[in-house]
Length: 375
Ligand code: NAD
Image 1 (cartoon, rainbow, N blue to C red):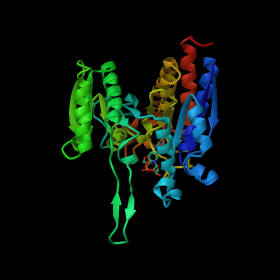
Image 2 (cartoon, rainbow, N blue to C red; image 1 turned 30 degrees about the vertical axis):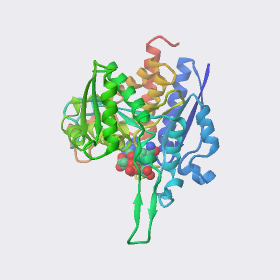
Image 3 (cartoon, helix red, strand yellow; image 1 turned 45 degrees about the vertical axis):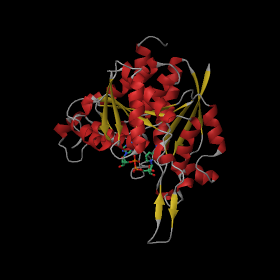
Image 4 (spheres, protein in one colour; image 1 turned 90 degrees about the vertical axis):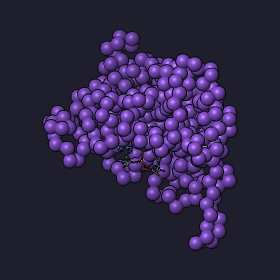
């Protein structure tokens, strides 16, 4: 069976990490003998420049018709002055809404070979999952806007959650907690926000259907502290859209770089959307300096969730571990002031995005071949 992947590279470092994903997919499909068709479509600033809108109809139709959607990143200073509804980010929000991918699953895992990478780096290994509600809350509030004259302006954002929106993501989180350690942390701001009180109420109601899962409710401010002080006590974390956005960037710092984190945005049916957690990183764009790990692991999640090929996903994740263990690093994984000995000595090979991608692809192909499943 032939499957189609819509590849939306986007802006900044998006096209650089998307290129690695494309070569990885081609190499692995050749080895595994599967037919994967990668189709490129514009989104974000690139689409504004080419077609005058951040999510052209043709891109949306191609995404809806694909078997999976893989996205780089959108946004950048060039388009910052545009009104919110015409900015690159509006294209991504509209795509998530149209695909109805309400559950953004963000694994945060330490890479053993990396060593200590800075002040927030977790002292113990961590392996947790942040499940962020993706299609409701503040980022989709209506009405919104600024009124009044300069000096007396008023800005409005609204935070709306329906019980159904909360319930579907909470149910998914309980299921994931059952498959993992049986521990679920629900993060809210129930001491202040009414939407959080509804959130907590729904979590408690759904808990009755999952008696084996232990739930802790933690306020988002306390959660920021706990994630820094003792992240290893958490396993599955479920939270609303904005809190999940902020806490998962903190997750990047805990494991060494935002560039390491992947995500899968899942809906009831699919196509699902896979994208690294990071943005378009304009500060390093165009320099072959981006860490493609988040994109590579997002591709692995695509093989697992959309194509039911966990062996390919495992080969990719294993190849990444091998690549790090062999000393390959992108620049974000090297502390500027660390001594060579602290960071792994002369064994470290600091390389660009594409060379790092090549090292992973070579090892992933070798792993798949070694398993003997594929010729
Ligand atoms: P960012 O995630 O782009 O960058 C934050 C910091 O992390 C930067 O210092 C950057 O260099 C570094 N970084 C990010 N990804 C990296 C990688 N793969 N390798 C190495 N270093 C990496 O966030 P920002 O700077 O706040 O936002 C830049 C633009 O990206 C904005 O226009 C923003 O709206 C957009 N954005 C898009 C998405 C998305 O497309 N999903 C997500 C977040 C931000």
